[in-house]
Image (cartoon, rainbow, N blue to C red; front, side, top):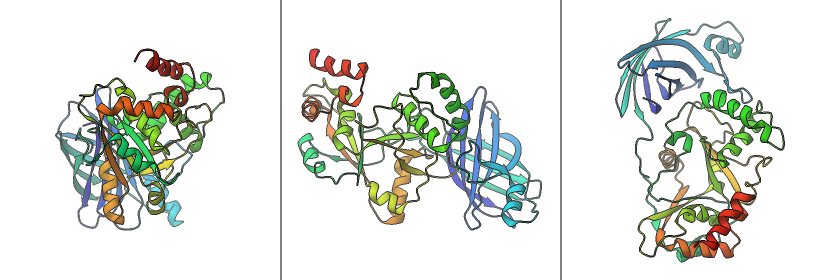
Length: 375
């Protein structure tokens, strides 16, 4: 049951249909998280309901308070009582449902939900699990290393961004979502403060994670050191991306099978056409590109790094939906044979793209020299 589920809530009688997003984590012996519903028609005020279901309870019944999304950025949990927000917006006392009663059942692929409130509102939904396909649904162009260099060498700087993955079959998905997590508000309320408490003494410059910008900077630092986050790493350089794609295959034999993948994303068009929301946690679909402050993170500059923050488990599907909506191709993939890794790594070394240059410090230097001394 843990993970992200998307669908439509169909309201009964005088209610309002809404897009539904269910984000659940496995916590001890239960599944817990938030259900968000965005009305399909205006006014577009997002409602939220906290849910906690024992792992052994299927079908299940639960109840919780109805909250509303405030949109505030510098708070870890931007939700308040729905009646209170409605009264603030309308400048007069308003009454909204306070208590929601939920029944449901689920299997591996879908979840059925029925809703009712203390004011008589009712509705039902079928939501489908996201991220259930372990393989990428994006068809890549198979090219040689020489062809890839020729195609990407003249890319205008900062118009596109690139990402390398060592297996062409892996989907474009954040490590946070690959680990089976989905509740980003739990991440910002629990994981981030806990990691800041553990690591703050190791930071050369202090970071006040109560602000949205500094919280993002700290999460970017966690990302670069292997902690699962909702970020995806990208580079303005296609050859830095190629290094990360080929890195673990540097000893590949000439008869090695399989492909690495380099993604090319039309950043310039995306930021012009798609709404930019610079927030780690959001109760709806989001993929936004951010350049974080580089304090405490010497890797960011040599890697020409920026990150995309996403609230969606299936990034490829979301991008495809946006491509259909705007009639524009944003995302391409190039698949290069693994067998070309030694030649690619040799070329990248001549370009100055090595572990020592991309990972300043002892670890990067040792990795670079190891590749030379122990080929």
